[in-house]
View 1: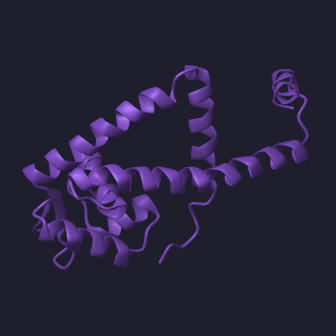
View 2 (view 1 turned 90 degrees about the vertical axis):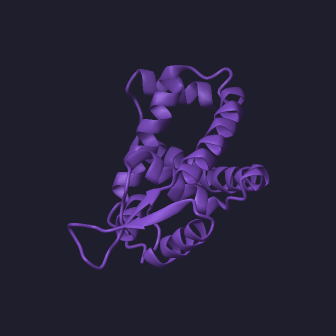
Length: 163
């Protein structure tokens, strides 16, 4: 079936129903993929003692620099309450710190501490080692297509309220 699909796609002959069916397959795979990845992070993270939620906010700060809790919630499609709990957990372990926010008196900026940066870098390094193995046999074009489809779906669902 996959080869037949690839041939039809290559020749531009794909019905709306076929695309819908394929997108359903994507959604059916995303849930188990997410849950398995979450379990893997939880299995490996005890070295740093990070939950999946704390790992997510630490990585967001690693990639984007200081942010407010509402900004992190929007960026990750998570409720502000959940993000605040993860930040409180991280702050209790001295992985993040609160800084004054010149743009907003009530919403502090959250930033990584040196300890937090070390912890998230160690987790990311281990994850990248696993992903190198997972990527064996995949081409750049296949990964690009996957990223393009998933990004499109995220943008399509961007209006969904997570609070």
